[in-house]
Image 1 (cartoon, rainbow, N blue to C red):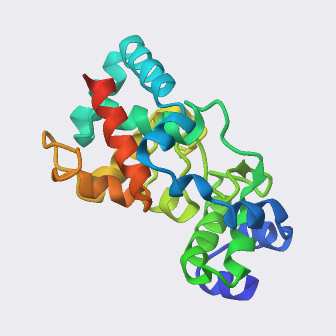
Image 2 (cartoon, rainbow, N blue to C red):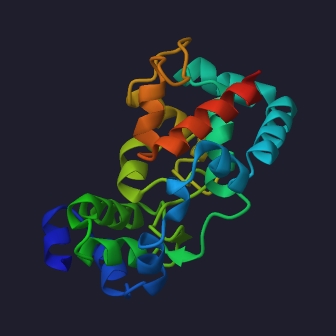
Length: 228
């Protein structure tokens, strides 16, 4: 894999991170145990703490309205959607993961279940190491997702935004993470000013964020209450 990575443009730092990776039992255990997506919508909202996310989301928008207004002006994505995702993914940054990113993605790439899906994200993770956006020691979620809104490395590479202008894309930085999230949704087809509830144009873009229908519905419902 290190040879293949070199052929795909991965430098010494990225290849060293790959060679230092190890098999992540925690990642495999999480991959085999994703029960919450089988819940009903009401059960899912309850288990994931929707009321708390809505309350905190409103407070965050009220505390920093210009920040979210600026994101909407630039990318067309309302604050409620970004805040619902932020709250759902990491409890507004309170827990961004405890698993080595490169090891998690390498494990999923070499596990037979979804190799083709995760391989580009492994290359993405190694390129992010080369760029200095992450290191061989960076931690994320059990599937290798990064930062405040849990981007898989290939998506972080493709859609990452330097929101705070410091010359580096760091998804553990709130400004970079929110700009990257908004940019991802816009690039996936978000239409400014149009609805995002089920059956409305932008609901199709929420589907691009997560494949589970109950998750999509929860984001749309929470976002509307935050925006409301």
